[in-house]
Image 1 (tube, rainbow over the protein chains, first blue to last red):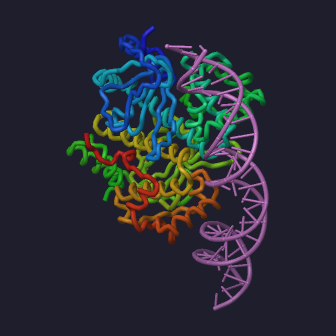
Image 2: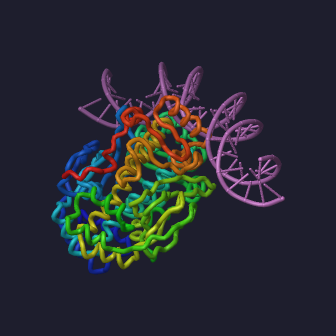
Length: 240
Length: 240
DNA sequence: CGTACTTTTGAAGTGCCTCAACGGTAGTGG
DNA sequence: CCACTACCGTTGAGGCACTTCAAAAGTACG
C-alpha cells in the first residue's frame, strides 16, 4: 500500500480523474516518515519546501490570538494535504501540528509542480480538494455562529465519522477520536468544562459517547437529525 | 475602465503575474450588468455556467440552517470572484446574493478555462485569490470562536476598510457600509440587539461609528490595537 | 506508586439572548 | 404638506447558555 492511497481515495470523489490517472498517482513512491504527537509541521510566516500529506494519524490547524487564545480551524485526516494552500500563498497564516503520532509524507515541490502542470485532471482534483477544505470551513463558521454547543458538537462528530469512513478508517458507528476535551473545546470555541457537560448530555441522550479515545455513535441517523447534519458540504458524491 | 480593473488590482497582490499578463486581463471585454440589491446570484445545488465577478457594489455569501437561521460566511467586494469554487466543485453549497445594487460581470466558462489552461501564471493567481478567501474564512472562524462581540466587530471593520482600500473604494479612515445591523448580526453570529449595543460602545470609545451607511474610523491604529488586528491573513504583500 | 494530565462536578458570575416597546427616518400617496 | 406605512435603530428588563474559578476523582505512565 502506497503512502498516497488515502489521498487517492479522496481524490476519487472529485469526479475529474480518469482511469489512466490512478496509476500515475499510485506509482509515486513518496516515503512517509513518523512524527510524534504535537509536532509542529508548519508555523506562520514559514516558507514551505513541499506539501505535507497525512498518511496516518490526525493533524490539526490552529491559530493563536495575541492574548494567547487558541482556535482550532481544521482537522486533517489520512488523505488530506496540509499545506497546498501555503505553497501557493507562499507563507502560512496559521500553525499545523500533529495531534497524534502520525505518518507524514512530504511531496517535494517539484513533484507537485509536475503533477499539476503535466496533468490538468490531477491539477483540477487537487484544487478540488482545497475547495472541499474551504467548504468545511464555511460549515464550521456557520456552526460556530448559529448552533448551540450540543448541536455543534454532534455535528462535528457526524462530520468526523463520515470523513473517516471515506478513507476506510472508521466502522459504521465508531471511529478513533484521539483528542482531549481541551482540544474539542478549542474546536467548538467553548470552554473545556462546557464540553464535558455537553458530552454528558449526548451520552445521556444515547446520541454519542467517547470511550477510551474512541467515538461511538449508537444510531447515526438519530445523531444526524439531532443536529440537522447535511453532508452535501463534504462534496462526497461526484455527480455532475 | 474595464470591468476587470478591480480584479486586476487584487490579483496584482498575488505576486505571480508578469508584466505581459496585465494586457491579457485588461483586454478582456466582459460586460457588466446591473443587479438590484438582494438578488440571489447562486443557490445551493445550482449548476453554474460562468463565474460571477463583482465590479461594483457589495455581495455576500450565506448559509441557511434547517431551522431557518442564517449565517453570513463572506463579504465580496469589487474585484472578488464569487463562485470560482462552485465552478470547480460543480455545485454550490451556499447562497450568494447582492447586498446592494451592484454591477456584476459574468465571465463565461470557456473564457475561464482558456485563461487557466493557457496561462499558468494567471491560473496560479486565480487559485491564489480563492486561497485568500479561505484564509479570511479561517480568521472569521477564529474571531467567532475566540473574540468577544466588541473585538470581533472591530476586527470586521478593520478588515473591510483595508480590503476596500486595496481596490480604491475607501478613504484612509472611512468607507461605504451599505449594511443593516441585522446583517452585521448574521455576520458576527450574534443578535441585532447586541450589535446595536456593541456599536454604541465602539462609538462611545471613539473607535468606530456608522453614520448614513458609512463606516468612520477616527483612528485606525487605535482600532487595530483594540482588537488585535493583524492583516497578514489578507496576504496583501507579495513578498517572496 | 508517585506524578502529571485529563475528566468530572459544583457554585457563582457574565455576555449575550429574548421579548417587547418606542423612536427615527425615508418613501408613498392623498 | 401631512398622514400612512414600512423598515431600521435604540433601549429596558429578565432569562439562559456558557464562563470562571476551584477542587476532587479518575487515568496513564515511568
